[in-house]
Image (cartoon, rainbow, N blue to C red):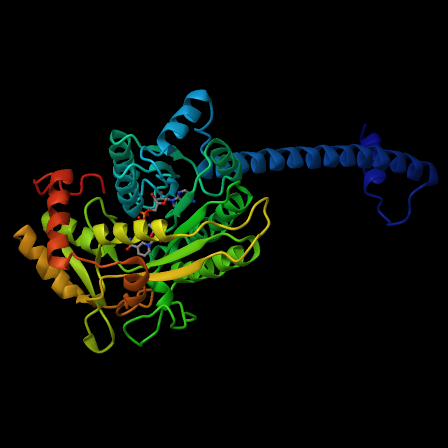
Length: 437
Ligand SMILES: NC(=O)c1ccc[n+]([C@@H]2O[C@H](COP(=O)([O-])OP(=O)(O)OC[C@H]3O[C@@H](n4cnc5c(N)ncnc54)[C@H](O)[C@@H]3O)[C@@H](O)[C@H]2O)c1
């Protein structure tokens, strides 16, 4: 027994390296091959399993990603009927408009205004959670009460867009869907590329291929003026010093739309909105969050520029912006392409839509205090370098001349309307204010 053990030990661990008897060597070789063969089989199996798991996981993440962006909640006869009915104009010579971002702040207002004058309106929105989606759902319900249908989908969904253009020969597209907000780009830069660049290109591709091609009016932003210091900002000023990724994607949008105009004959109008505010507004904007915090007795943070200079914005009331959007749609010439080919020079325009009377942020706060009849707890902080610019001020002479654009609501009157809406929507009680935020 002892000897057997020693022989086995010898076999496995020869006392002198290299000193292995030939027949033993053969036996060891066989064992080694058996062992290697089974190890390599195991290795292959392991590889196979890893590959299987990896492809399953990547398929899952593909499903997750696409379902995140493309909720397939569209299709079917009933759905098509709703699309057609909503997009059908109810007046002679009415236009038929696809409004992207229709569940958003500006989109919901523009949709209702168009519908009220008898135009056909179909909304499209992905209801993302950049800010409280229940506010977007509430806007959708409001639109539905007017007879406007909002399709839940993403502008990156080329199949959906092709289907919509298949069902409806839209005469116009009002493109307002975008990742808005300046500071959020630090947290989620890709959402800006997804919606403002990739989404824009997907939409333009759909418009290019549509027959007839629609005329497009879309929202750029005053943020393209970036670090410019010459005021007021004019459309002819250079816009090559963006201060945020948001601004950079809007600037890119202006270049991209120019290309589609040049190559495919799409009629395009870009609108540079200046700080839009009003009822059904955006909770991420200062006037909105200040209102919520003042009502809840929470402090508000007011940024100051270099040398303690107050920040100022050319606040523009939503009704004025809506008038500018509709005037742009009404003056838009037809696209000239067909079958994806340009048949002649098409219109390309860019306009500032502002109020042309900037107001400092502390003045905004005192107006809110007056309307809310409450004092704000102010926390003055130096502006961090995260994308904000110190001031904006629009020169609107071009829009006045060519669109008849004439803003008529000053900040005091506009905030009064906003506060009235805010209190009716969120309730008067302090604890209720901002319940959905
Ligand atoms: N409100 C302002 O002060 C202001 C200023 C300058 C420019 N703009 C521009 O005006 C437009 C409208 O702004 P808003 O204030 O109404 O913003 P908003 O966020 O309220 O509206 C945008 C809507 O687009 C939707 N959306 C975003 N990405 C989408 C996608 N990939 N597919 C489908 N839907 C998508 C969102 O869910 C949202 O409902 C935006 O293009 C914005 O960049 C707004």
